[in-house]
Length: 361
Image (tube, rainbow, N blue to C red; front, side):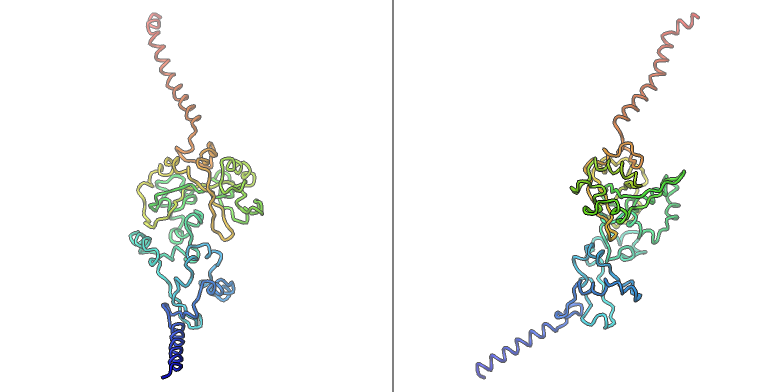
């Protein structure tokens, strides 16, 4: 065979090999030449027309999905079996198991009392899941309320928990029913409806409601972060309290875990009111104001360390034993107690000193 013929044979073998590699099936059934990416998937699944065709379970809100950690790995990472014929091939795409990435969480959850009753996706929509800091207390409780009716929860707690309904509506369930190590105070802007003889009804303000009161150019954060420095100071808290009340707005504070663990249980130390109401001084040094975004998630603005205590002394909307204590009021209280003790002491002393004279009379 001539050298020229050998070169053509080598070229043919090389081209054939390249074509084979490009056309060969890769893991999950995809072809390298027809690999899907997240943008391809969103082209159909983020289209609102999919809702009109009765495919609500197939719809993915792209704006909310982009705010999740899953957006970083992309759709094909969890749905590997999608090939170039999708969706005409009639094959339902594979779905990754949560434990493939979240093995520690899965191990922890498997040991909990919930493991036999709910799967990960019963509580978490993988296309919208967010960390604790990006959701409100009401959103944290929403999955719980799918199984635990509020009336039943109130009934099971009111035997020992005072102001039960107020606590249930104000606190995330995971504050008391997970073993998180770090807690902070998170404030949400709420609209308050006064009711005669009853506690005010609270509803978290929406993004649209706050934007109506904010500087449009600065965004919703300007409602409370007036100088736009990315931090809420003592003066800004006080200013919001003064002006916000006139507009029907107040801050609704609650203790929230920084990291949500999955060892759902009844924690023994939560039976003691002091877990929230006396452990406050260390906790409230770190706090945030959480403001709603247009897609329903929340952005937290850090509050100046110690500002909560300085701004809320004497404010009835925020009460934490040991945290909202005023040194001046404590001193006045001690003086009142001391004066009360002095009355019988002085009276008894005078009677002892005058006992001889009184006997003569």
